[in-house]
Image (cartoon, rainbow, N blue to C red; front, side):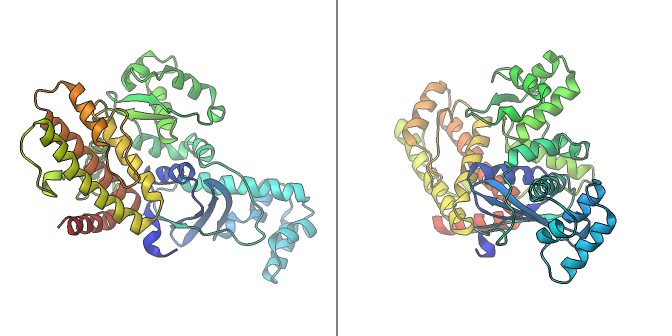
Length: 395
């Protein structure tokens, strides 16, 4: 796969957690590489499941982890490394020189993969890329871990507190349970308890006030549930993300990327909208907007492949969080376009005095959401490129 087909972004923000869940939800296969200060961690996925992990750091080697855990002695570890330095493979060296059983070798390979992934989620600096289709080395011992499971473990670690703060919902946001069955068996008692308080009606502030575990702890659990996809947040969208980035900039926090061209853009900057607010005019606005959304979808698929469809779905979810009534039961097509009949029906049910303004506002939110997810997943340079390419397509 070429570089233009790779996801990339900065570590130290919730973007990495988003990417891991995206790769699981889309059943993606490939290599997620995370790098900082000359150290790289390679995480291979097959159909959305983590199947192998590797690190360039000697202190992350399997024999070193076995020594620190007291499973093998330092002398045995030295013998293993002598064999590896002489060109031998790690697995046979551990079995033959260190006396590790085949079962132990497989068990500790999985433990190491879990450790490498959980640890990298807590990195505060670095860059990540995802190369679709890349496979682990031949003969590698496979593991079977879901990114959601590993994320939950990482987010329970105090070292990842900054991620929970970044994803912490504002008190006015309304957490909504996931509409499809997830691995709820992975949740701890306090997480299941807070999830039981989420009914799609109570705000995050109301849930925290009602909870028996306290306001602060409840907010952190809600953040954990949101970052791992067990709940979504209604009433908070990309605009709130921009606010958090602006606040971070004022504090001198360099981890958050600056707001890109999607932060304040409107569809009227891209296309000429038909005048009026009649039924035909509103439908014509949708037709014109869909032409723009399809152009964006085409550019995204061309540059990053099938995973673009999931990014478009995420953009629609973000827009729905800001305009739940307008986007109720709206599912975007694979090319990013919106269903005109459903949108017109929802618009009629709003009973707005100015339906044109309500429609344009919702379409603006969807456009901004598309650009914001592109910026978060692929970087501001890719967002700027997308803006340029789409405007060229619309000429």
